[in-house]
Length: 402
Image (cartoon, helix red, strand yellow):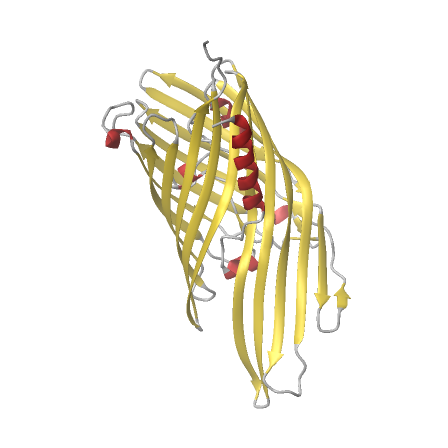
């Protein structure tokens, strides 16, 4: 495929990501900035969402910018990810089922000065909002109302990352993110009695800002045994948000405080590789939401800790039999909610398979995640998410012989 045609296809896919609908219908996405995304590539979602200490030349890994320099010397990589999710919500009012699907992300990666410097770029979701709930109340014999809560939108990140290898066993990297988007939450109060007028309120949070993530990885191989130690850091920074609230019944503009922050993030992980066949990884990621401003108030949100564990196995890489080259993955993770008044853990287990294409370095990765969060006092949410991504690797950087 010619370079011009590839660039055209990339532009079309990029526009599709920017205009895609959110892949959530969770009522928990009403709070804060919405439902957060950890930006783990599709291949590692089947491993519980690990990524900080993963260094794989077949995978674009934006969760740790230090991993960018693992790309092969003559390889140009694309990674396209899409997902479909089925969710069940149970509360005191009954049970609801929802389905969502979306093209989630597109990333690319290539070496600049192999094997020392490499570059990556792409479009990633930061948060997602998408829900619709109705609650009926009986205030008195002569007053019955129905409140509808709905929300749409989310924040998207366009990133560019650079990574440098040092001493053949250390890599450092940085990702620069431009974040933008809108989060809209609506509340509509209607009464069964005509004596009462309906009341509607629309809240919109518009954002555009820049922030950085720094990454570090130490890696070495001792015979058949390989190790990777990785870590990331993001500093706390102000978040350029404009928050407007309009009473749409009266068109009154409500005065809303405007101070917002992005949290400090730090985390680390360790990966062990045996004979290039078995990979085991564990990591922790801490996000200090408790110290950020949200509508000029601190303490509204709560710090979040996520623990992830995962493994990958290939029976015999490079063998002639196809099944011996397939990649089998499994994992689990547990994390806190970053919303202070929601004391519910988020627990998930996942499995997946990587299907390498014959006569090509391209791999089709699939993962299936079961996720549970919520409590009986609020909403119990159970979801099943299927993610498919194509990690496309092509040899671009060589001179053809005449």
